[in-house]
Image (cartoon, rainbow, N blue to C red):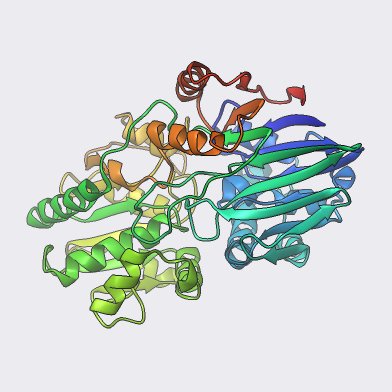
Length: 467
């Protein structure tokens, strides 16, 4: 059995891990790499293997850094089945087509410049037609329902507690008569998140591929996030400003809406208009409404106590789809909260809101999620000024603040607990750390080795392991 790591290898984005067994190939995730635009463009466009030789794909969840390059795979000849949970497929039906729209829009914008420079135009990474074809190849199953992606391999999903539909994957493999169990953690969620159930653990694994995003960091208590959110809203409102929140359309936006709903119901924040300005976030919120079976006890109890059929809507909240309504927000003078995608400020309507608000000291730019290296969000959060938006420099005069409590990833203690729980049934012979930056991965690997694990590796991109 051979493992080769092609994405999220010593970086956080672009999850893509290739398993070869009995001369068959299974790809675990096929995510978009996010970072410096030129580098991301090159990595995402040049698949490091022949897509037609991939026999099956297993998708842990719908976030674009895990699912976003599936249409490239299909475009380049992949004909097999993509296995996932029901909620993941529902989310991908919106997310992959939205991603295709962004690919086509970005290339159109770049090609205007290339035409003026007399250069050959680029083709989009993939199109809407590629995304639609990808969706036709997806097959969804329930948690714990066993499926066979290839002969000799039986698999099932457990709830990873990271986002709606997220899963860790267990593969029971007959490797030429030798039975092995491989577990892929996907992204591991935090305990006690307000909407989702707690992450579940794998059992009896011989090999584990495990995320490490916050492998050397500890999160603030989740309860502190609501206190901090309230303080930022009140402070910005008092100085007549707007709160601009770059937020991931899936998961983080719904957590924020739910948190603001509770603050609103308790009269903890002033009455002001709240806008979710992202067509994708609007569509995704509908998916959240349609999957109450995945909710945890907290949100279920809140809805029952308030006699609500929907936890993601209240009178001061408005969802924006139309682009003209989005543009009107930029000329608005009154205080407001604007939640918009993308979460790392790399594309979408958030760029327009930053352009129009980042130079006003009355405003607050409020970050609620991880900002990848070299992204615009990381530059702003690191205190750089001016910053480039649509190629032009803008001085950062707005207040910059990060809410630490809203991460959907387990921290160092959460990751080690997840591994300890996995070890209760069997000590894995191999653990491979992925989906993290080196300053978080290597300390986590050291902590695991001190727990007596025989082999903990931090693969480089393209590195091959026989297990």
